[in-house]
Amino acid sequence: MSEHLPVLITGGAGYIGSHAVHAFVAAGHPVVVLDDLSTGQRDAVPDTVPFVEGNVGDAALVSATIRDHAIAAVVHFAGSVSVPESVADPLKYYRNNSGVSRDLIQSCVDTGVRHFIFSSTAAVYGIPDKVPVLEDAPTVPINPYGTSKLMTEWVLRDTAEAHDFNYVALRYFNVAGADPQGRTGQRSASPTHLIEVAIKTAQGLRAQMEVFGEDFDTPDGTGVRDYIHVADLAEAHVLALRHLHGGGRTATLNLGNQQGFSVREVIEAVQRISGHPIQVKTAPRRAGDPACLVADASTARRLLGWRPQRADLDTQITDAWRWQQSRLTEGT
Ligand code: UFG
Image 1: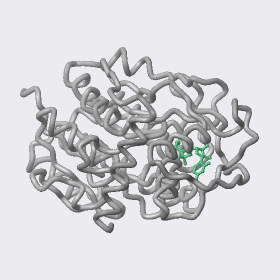
Image 2: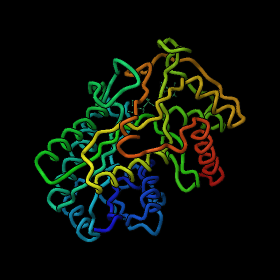
Image 3: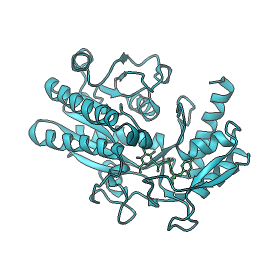
């Protein structure tokens, strides 16, 4: 079989998925995107990539797509991503992240697709006892988002035991940045992530922003997170498939840079890079926010040979700033 397996990317019109499309195409894989455009944007997918509009839970559509394009691996990003929304509407998350993922995995088994890469999250750890967090830390999610992703990890684990099927589940820490070539980036309808909110404030699209909690047990009292560039994250998926195709074992891996930055440090970096002041207001802690979440990602480095190229926080913010500025000039 060719080294470049044909790949189905679900959620390929979304933020992380659209970066993965570019990474798999650049690595030489034939790529097909399946996306229901509930949050993704059709124009985030290059015209040269076949696009199927539909839901991963539509077994007939998924099976036909797999057969039509001789798909050998599925990279699964489609799902819902907001922690607060998952608390307000848990059943949406158990459908979009758990239920239809089960159906997609069933379609893979039924059609003989043997390799699966899954977009999981550090939210499966809940509030970790110690940082940096290793993959064998207890998984005790504190919101339906984390639980819904963990359920799919369990479905994968049991399916790989029972069938000729293997997978890599990738637990992302805080994803940031945009395509260094400016082809795609984050386009949230209502941004909640720290860097996107700080950039919108620096752009003058918001009068001020809030810092959620300044009384954490951290050096400056604000929350500490491990930020990873979306292009480095995308590349890890290409390497994960190479690992499986080369006979590597099923694995669950953290993806982060093993370095924490506080909310205050991030806001300062956005001010410095943008050249615009950011009006900040202190607000109470957000429910369910851990003080500090930093990855031990040494297993991904060792097993996949993954070497992040844009680990530096300033690089991540610079790419995100450029992207958001280009959206401003386009008036979108
Ligand atoms: N924060 C602010 N003000 C804001 C937005 C965020 O102070 O306007 C703070 C948060 O309280 C937190 C830090 O900035 O301390 C980062 O918050 P984000 O919302 O950017 O990201 P989270 O760490 O909450 O969530 C991320 C992913 C989730 C994933 C989680 C894993 O977005 O999908 O990491 O814990 F579940």
